[in-house]
Image 1: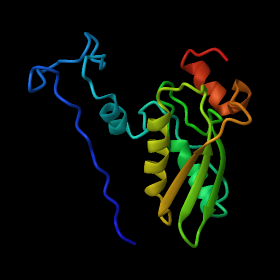
Image 2 (image 1 turned 90 degrees about the vertical axis):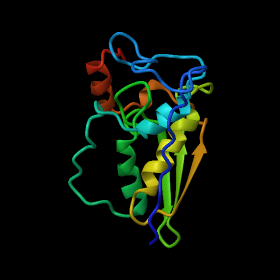
Image 3 (image 1 turned 120 degrees about the horizontal axis):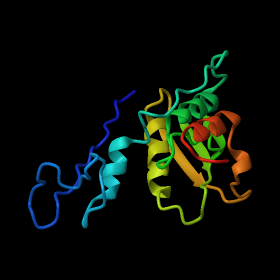
Image 4 (image 1 turned 90 degrees about the horizontal axis):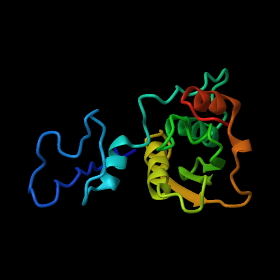
Length: 169
């Protein structure tokens, strides 16, 4: 198997400066804030769907039965960009299929809204995580709108995570 290389894209410098000044683009509490010309794609790609506050994946008692189950379990490591919850716990992963012979994985994924501004980044995070899984050579992410996503799709574990983050469900 040939190794895969991930390309890291650095954020563009602040417009008109040619370089970023120390602390530019940061608020008083140290969080990134909007700045004209800011490359949001680079910021989201740098996180690669991972968050420090994302709970670990469930402790599965049995090993995964096949490549599809292994891929689904790997998606517990891909976070929603807004909340500390995995895409699986949020109920956005509708189906995962895999062909072990070719290493192809297909993920049916929905979003909380049809105008979700992070759709491309979430799909990128899904592909990125699954391509790091042994045996996965190709990933297709299909957007699914039927049935529509509702809060009833959030797992009980996901509901607990959201409540702890101050989100009422």
